[in-house]
Image 1: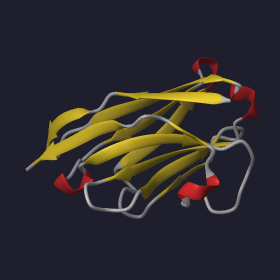
Image 2: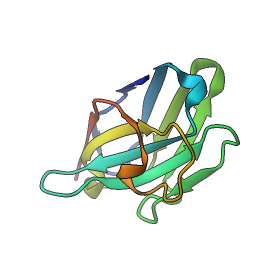
Image 3: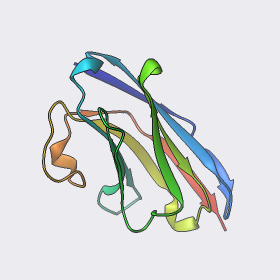
Length: 125
């Protein structure tokens, strides 16, 4: 089992920045990919980006490409989501997730095995 704990959410004005952290514990050696999803009220959970734990390769949704950056600290078993140039439409609960094995389709929530509790990000206009 892997436990994921997000932190770093909050309220920020449009154009501002936030950095989310996701600390993993437990059987972290079994992690393959780690991802970030978000869910706004009344909407489906949406893929934000992902990082392949072994290589560090990153993948992003078109809506955040160029504004968000995912990085990892292997020693701390922590993944970060740096969010710049935030927009009101980025307002959502952000979830960290991890998979046990490599699967095709990093943008599908069903391909992940572990989820954090989520952290609220609110961007005011």
